[in-house]
Length: 422
Ligand code: ADP
Image (tube, rainbow, N blue to C red; front, side, top):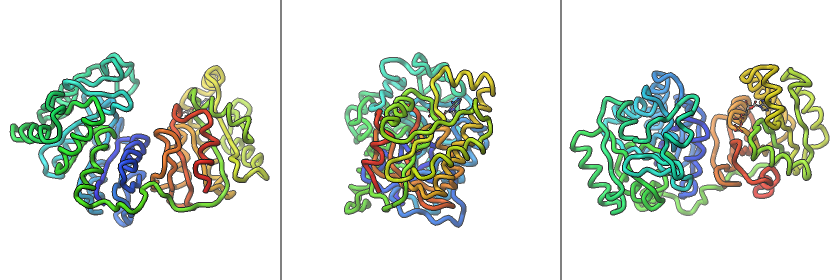
C-alpha cells in the first residue's frame, strides 16, 4: 500500500478513489474503519470512508485516528486527509481538529491544505476559495444547513479551527512550479506554521503541488490535489505499470437499478429507462410499510430478471415528494423509503442480481449498509464521478455503481450495463 487516505464522507471517498485510479493506482474504498484482523486489500491506495464531516468533533477525531492507525499498520507510506472541495466545516471543525490530530499522531508537524478542484470549478487564489466565478461565501454555500461557509479566506477559516498557525503559498509561487512550492512549504514549516493553504487554479498547479509534496507524510485537501500523487510513486518506480488499475474481477448475474433519488438528473434517467426496460414504482402514499413495499417490488421482479436491468424506483417529482413529506414528515418519509429500497436491494441480490446501480447518495448509504458491503474496488467510470465498483462484504460479491443524484447522462441506467456487461 502506497497511499492511505481518510475521507470525511462516503461520496467524497469515491471521488478520491476515481482520481487515483485515473492516475494509474489500483484503489479500494473501505467503508468505516476496518477491524484489527481485517486483511489489507491488494491495492496501491486505500481510502477509508468515514462520516466525520458533521459528526461531533470528538467522534470525528477518534474515528480518523483509528483509520490512520490501521492504514499505518497496513504499511501505507503516505497519508491523505480528504475533505470537501468547498471546505465544508464550522469554526468548531471538523477539518482543523482532525488534521491537528493526524499531524500529532504522525509527528510531522506540518501539512498543506488545498481544496482546489479546477475541473469542478473550485479554485483557490490568494487563499480565497472560489466556486466558479464567485467567492465561496457568495456561492450558496453560505446557506448550507450544516456547514454554512460565510468566509472565503481559507487562511482565516482554518486558523479558527486550530491552535496552530496557517500560512499561504500564493499563486505567484505556485506558478513557478514544484521546486518553488517545495521551498516555500519548507520555509513556512521552519517558521513554525502548522499549515499552508496552497493556491491552485489549474490542473498543472495541482500536479506541481503534488510533486512538491512528494515527501510529506500528510497531505490534506479535496480530491483535486491528489491528482499529482500517482506521478510521485511512478517516478519512484513503486507503481505496477503492467496492470490496468480499473480492471475488476469478472462477475455474472442479473442486472438491476434501484433509485431513491428525486434529483432532476435521476428523474430524467428514469424517464429514459421507461422506454427501454421494465420499471416498477413504489409509492409510500399507497402503502406506508417498507416491508410490504419491498415485497410488492420483489413479486413484480419475478420472471423479469436478465441482462436488461429491472428498474425499481421510489423517485418522484417535487410536487409528489412535497405531498409525501407533508403526510409523513420529511425525515420519516426519507427513512421509510430508504428502508424499503435497502430491502429491495438485498432481495434482488438474494434472487441472483450481481450488477446493480443504486441512485441517490443517502439511498446508496442505506443499500450498502444492508448488503453488508465493507469494501469497494474502484473500476472504470461510467460517467464522470460514477465508477463501477466491485463490492465485497458479508454477502456475495456484487458489481455496484453508486450514483449521487445529479450525476450521469440521461441514458445512464442502460448505458451502465452496456459499458460493462459482465
Ligand atoms: P440524492 O443523491 O439525489 O440527493 P438521496 O438518496 O441522497 O438522493 O436522497 C433522496 C431522499 O429522498 C432519500 O432519503 C429518499 O428516501 C427520499 N425519497 C425518495 N423518494 C421519495 C418520495 N417519493 N417522497 C419523499 N421522499 C423520497
